[in-house]
Image (cartoon, rainbow, N blue to C red; front, side, top):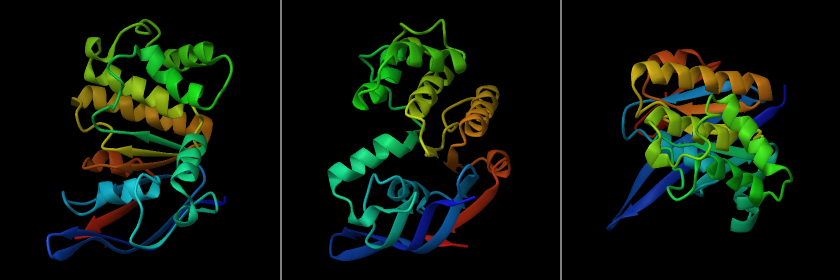
Amino acid sequence: MSTILQVESLTKTFQSGHRQIKVLDNINFTIAEGQSMSIVGPSGSGKTTLLGLCAGLDRATEGRILINQVLLNQLSEDELAQLRNQQVGFIFQNFQLIPTLTALENVMVPLELRGEKNIISASKELLNRVGLSDRLDHYPSQLSGGEQQRVAIARAFSNRPKILFADEPTGNLDEETSHSIESLLFELNREQGTTLVIVTHDPDLAQKTDSIIKLKGGKLI
């Protein structure tokens, strides 16, 4: 299996007043195509910052990140956006659905941005796959938390990402709903061969992934 994500000597600092705060310090790891990985650690350890850097949502202060052999550091903002649209999926703890769009329309957005054809039927198929065929015309405010996260998962998989980043995907859900969302993520991960990188506080979810990395104080331990 070839490496899909390569992180080398990754450091991220923020300016706070007159001092610099080092949020991530010399992080190194790789993950192979089709594998799953958890990033765990206490609050404030840099997990979400690391995920955002790996997904190309932010830029590192030092070090290198490669997705599918493409060096993110050298890409312009437009090129980064194009790479995310073509190869990366992202699932957030708070769903990040567009409130004025229906479930179907939310899933259609990435496909429209890619200029794909048959986007209505493809989006309906994805929502059916996540068990929401009877919720196509519902707005996010009309859906439960679990249903909103299912829409978010369908949207994330709509562009058939090579790698999917999930930030506390079950953090706002009850235990029963969390288990069904976890099962769905791993099923789609296997079916599509998508690499899965999850930030989680849930030790049970972390144990289900192929590998676990732990952060503490911005360092890999």
